[in-house]
Image (cartoon, rainbow over all chains, first blue to last red; front, side, top):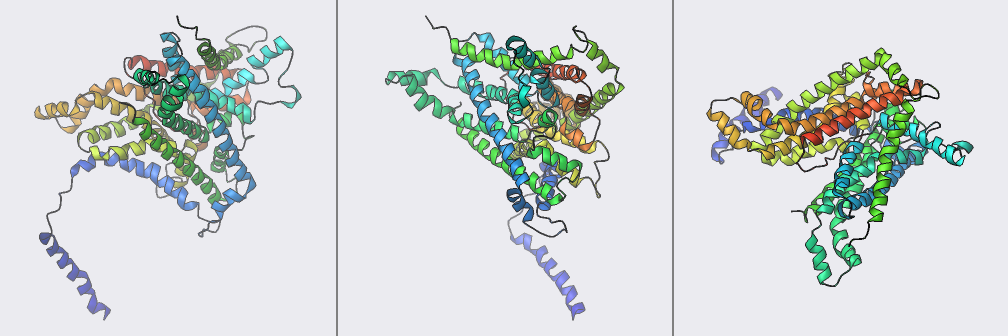
Length: 309
Length: 260
């Protein structure tokens, strides 16, 4: 029976298919234009998509290679992993808010604060350099600044006689690393806020004044709402910037601070969690958080674009 | 008459102090190798280490390879999207934003796990490393190429070249690349600056690049790491200065990039 049915199943439908296209409207010819972008998307598929899919799939793999949700649950339940996420989220939040706040004030000072023109271009140039100056050299720069034999440490000791490192105080902790991160955080804010502040038009302020509004009303009802998406988007950007940072933290604190990136780095070099699936789940957690950041950022960009011509 | 903007000055001075104190401290620290005197001893020691040149040379080589691959990948794609497939632009832009969503350490993790075993093994050669660098460079490269392409009328240029009988290879090589040269430079220099100091990919994949070298001597010696850090900063600074100099007159744009 099976042998008898085989040729029918194989050939009959094919003949049907062969007839069908003439009945349908002619299909669009295959566009060779797509071949032009194929290498780019092949690259993205192989080296961005596949590794991400691998991380995703293996997050649900147990030690004996069966499907499990335990790795995902472990992120929330295992205290050392939960703490790693907590620490990473804390440092990202602190440096994002701090960087956004200080960066905004600086951008405001050079754009609208009545400083000479040169200050603006000087600050923007330096922000361009500083926002790209991260990693190992940055960590060493801060060791030379506020480490045991750092310049600032010695100046404070020389002028006040107080050794800031006495009494167990160390810079290789949460706040020390936050100070280091701020070095590339606030310049990024300056770089993004300066054009946004330039986009505030004089007419808006004049319109506000014509209606009897003061500085408070201008900022509360006009400038701040217009800048809000940019502010929020940039703060999110800074958040992600700090959240994904590895080199700076590693070079500055070694593995004293258990940030998510540090744990993942250790997991790459040797299975420190004794569970490959859990390592993948931690990486997946980072991708999820960064994706959320990206969504908020894209949304804020759209909102911000409304007022830009 | 306007009031003296005291608060603006205060914030500006704090900002500049934040910029310059760590740099000045690093420089000062690097000069203190011999007690009681400022000398360039640390730099002399740094330049004596053969591994300094070796790791610098490797990073240089990998930076050049990254730039070449990145250019070959991004320029034709951005050109083609602009010319024939404007519908695809959001997808290309999405890919160039991915380095932010997948930070370096996570991408390394994924690459090592995916290409560390058959069917395709890349981790035994620097291929996986360069792949990571290329991903890292995508945002900068795409942004600079895209803004360059918008500035010239590529459709007319392409049609002119075609009517003179040029093939696609000739168009890319003799028409598009030369017209984008200035725009490409910012992507090239930024990629160069980033790859030269990059630590995450190289350290986690175990390649003796310049970044891991600086970290390694940091654990062994005092003063020389700061001397090398100063040099590393000069590379970054020089690259950014070149970009600003090349792109003068243009509007400064910030490109969202991957966390390293």
